[in-house]
Length: 576
Ligand code: DGT
Ligand code: CA
Ligand code: CA
Ligand code: ZN
Image (cartoon, rainbow, N blue to C red; front, top):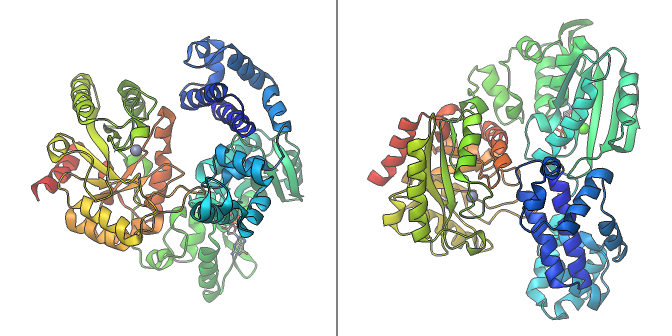
């Protein structure tokens, strides 16, 4: 789908026009088109072909022409022209947390700032703080933002890495002579960010495969191309990604897959075990002297080292080797165990779908239940539901559920935890909901004590079942809140409150190591997508993987349970 790329181009055009001081009305119309396309669940090419795109609100003739141009040529002339009107590196300023188009316009016009380096200098010599609308405080926030950006460059999100892997694997799959293909490295372990994508192929002639790979049209830059290994930067619809492709003989595939899946720390431990047993382990196999005793499959390798098979999500040297020796590795939760998704938004607040769209999509995914959880009034920009609108929503979902077949549609809320720790609806209204998630969307920069106390207090409310995206981080964009996770976990156990694992690849919140801590404290997890658009229901595997990396079993995850058991657990909090 080209929806995301086109949406991004329109919002970039709006940004540039704003920096240039263009007409407000025009800027807003570009932003609207960006939003409409970004929210559209259907492929834009199909929408264009069927004439439905022209009927979308805000999409006029000139926007249509630009979209058609992009689909045909891969670019928009108007966009290219706008780019020539500003310094090349100016748009990078927009990536700094705390800098919007208005701020960029101000520093560009008044301080001649043309790049992040220029802005850094303006912070250091005090010029930025002197500028109207900035001041010391804002300058300090931007300085921190630049630091954050510098730290986060280079690593990409899981969804971006999976897209890149898919592009390359689909290409390799069509090459003659290729026997097996698999992804390895941090991507296979589903780490929260990925440095580069590692792909493994088994074939007789490595050179032919590597040559074909580095010569494809999606390659932007070749880093290395040898007989068995090729490394290149490839083009994807979100960002350039480094992909390493390695070719090994089929009889070594398991050993190589094990080796290149890592992590390095896990592999170091395995090699030590091999050495102690007077064996040698490398990417070609496990050897006793010159004799290969394992290598075709990963499980052979583990077995011959007297270890139970270790799932990739656990291979971080966080106790999995000892557990594999003692035969007490956890039986991890799996995607197939998920019986429902308990966090999603509709058009009533800031989602882009109707209840029926979500129900249909949930059924396609084999779910037995879902819960509709729109925002509460505090988040005005998300069009949070007033008490009266929530009452109507409850009614609507109940009626919907009466007609629904093969699935139960629950109604809940993602209610804001206000600054004093109270919830954004009164208890009488909350009591009518099946499932209540409490989230923080404001004052996230409060002190550790403030933020922690706020969440602890919310958990004391008998109607609050679950804490949503507990740290509020956005990977690569926003640091987590300064919050005492230990205290949150402890109090969750005391108050019979679950903690959410948000599957959104920007969030993965609770994160893996904290999931493990929560489980050890007896806290239940709920793995949700927080979908605002239909396709975001597909984020679920990222959340499941995060919980797996936290050693979660089915029993630890509420939304793997049958509905009756889930309802009993939820009711228990209100009885307390
Ligand atoms: P990344 O790319 O930074 O997200 O992390 P990984 O884990 O994908 O690391 P990468 O791409 O450098 O290497 C892929 C795997 O190959 C790594 O997880 C383990 C294996 N590997 C790479 N270098 C070494 C090494 O020097 N020693 C050992 N034992 N394994 C290595
Ligand atoms: Ca890697
Ligand atoms: Ca690599
Ligand atoms: Zn939400």
